[in-house]
Every structure is written in C-alpha cells, then in structure tokens.
Image 1 (tube, rainbow, N blue to C red):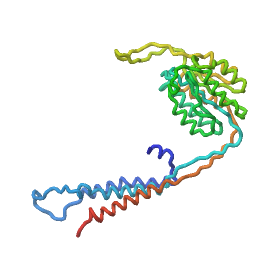
Image 2 (cartoon, rainbow, N blue to C red):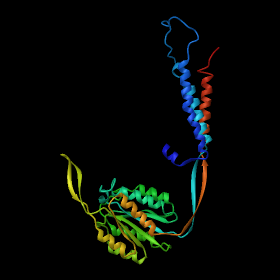
Image 3 (cartoon, one colour):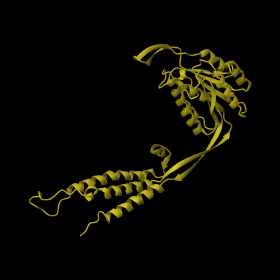
Image 4 (cartoon, rainbow, N blue to C red):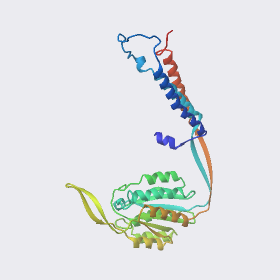
Length: 335
C-alpha cells in the first residue's frame, strides 16, 4: 500500500525534503547528550542505591521520539505531496489495435525468461505505452477466446488487464488461433478508423476451437484488417526437469512451432510475420510494428492535482499534543 501511495505521489517542493537530512544530526546530538548526563552529587559508593527501572526510565526517550516524528511529518507536509491526475485530449485519428494473446499451456515454455507468456506481456505493455491516441483492446484465447478488454484509449486499463493475464485463465486447454482472430475481428469490424490491425502473439500450433484459421483469415480480409503475427519460440529440442514420485527427472522434448500458418495470416492481410526467439528479439519486433503503423495524433495533456499534505499536518499536531500531555503529566519535573 505504501509503495502504491509513493508511486502516485509527487512533491511540489521536493527540495524541502533535504531538511530530513537534519534528523540524523538531531538524533546523534540527543544520544551524545544523554550519554554525558551525570548525577549532580558525588558519592563514594552506590551499592545502597537500587536500580531505577520504573516506567519513566523505560519510556524516557518517548518525548524525543514523538518530537522527531512531528518534525518529520511537518517537513514532508511542507514539501507539499500531491496526487497527480493526467487527462489527455486527442486530435486526429489513431489506429485501432487488438492485441490477441495465446495463453495455452505451450506459452509457459521457458525458452524465454521467465517464460513465453510473461515475456510477451512485458513487451506488449511497453508497446501500449508508446501508442498514445490509439484505441487498443485485448483478446485472449486457448481452446476458447475471450475479450479481456474492448477497444479503449484508457491505456492504464489495458495495461492492468495485460498484467492480469495468466496461463489457464480460460481453463479449457487448446490453441484456437482461428477463434482468437475471429473474436478480434468482431471487435474491430465496426471501427470507423482507416487502419485496423490485429497483433497475434502465439507459437502457431493450432488445435481445438470452433472457427478454423482459414475462415478467420477470410473474415479479417473482408473487413480490411491487417494481421501482424508474432511467432514466439522455435522448433528445437530442450531438456525439462519434471517432478516424479521418484524425484526430479530430466526429460527431453521438442518445442512445437507452426511458422507456415503465421506467415499465411500476415501475407494475405497485408501485415507482416515476425519470429521471436528470445526476449530481446521480441522487444525489437514490437518496436518494428510501432514504426510500421503510424498515426498522426496531437495529444494535449492536462494535469490536475489533489493535495495530500493535510494528513501529515494532522499527524504532526497529534504527536506534538501527545508530547505536551506526557511532558506535563507523566514526565513532569518537580523543582
């Protein structure tokens, strides 16, 4: 919770926070003075004096701690913490983009770091952040397809939905590429923009589903939708550690990949096919698509702020009030 608060907060006068560097100095000086305190009367022996372990001794530093907390809160309050809200006004016409994610079991293969799906999510989020003004949606598929996020310019929502994607989200196992494309086409077919694209990210091994890829391809062509296909992985042999009742066992397996299907989908719709063999290549591919599909958009940004210093001022006053009450009651000194 504290991390989320800090992430959404900025300071109007951040230089004021430099005053917090005085706190270690004050603490050091307090400790030094406390160690130098001596009794006002010298005695030859103290064996008859019992150790004083009352609550006043145990809590003797409470007043100083409260004062430090109060000063810290006041310094942060003077820096004027505030929450920033950004509003954008778009002029012109962007591109409508559906990100179509394969979330089948094969996307958990670890030939990417940490696996195919997590690597794909990370670079997709970066892509979304670089497309201001475009309407972007998200479709996921395994044996079934599902619209996770409809077309929207609210890219924070898109990013949150991408972060939430997990393998097995749709439970039914399979890789229904045709169904995923068909659902994406359905979301784009009524779009009024001149450029509509689907970015299909999969290993290309199609099985299951109710709509064959060739039917989905004809649907995309009919509505003038380009398909950019990203083949994640490659056909190669890997060793995988599998837990068995007898302990971990290394198994040899061949990763599956269907490059021909992905090339066909891209070529026949005017898109392009890319193959990603590792995380760096995947990042470059999204950068290439970002350059290929350009839109003229003028974005006007408006920032508004909500002040958040009031709770800190209240906390400082409470600390000071508690200190005063304790100073003149529990820790009161009598002449």
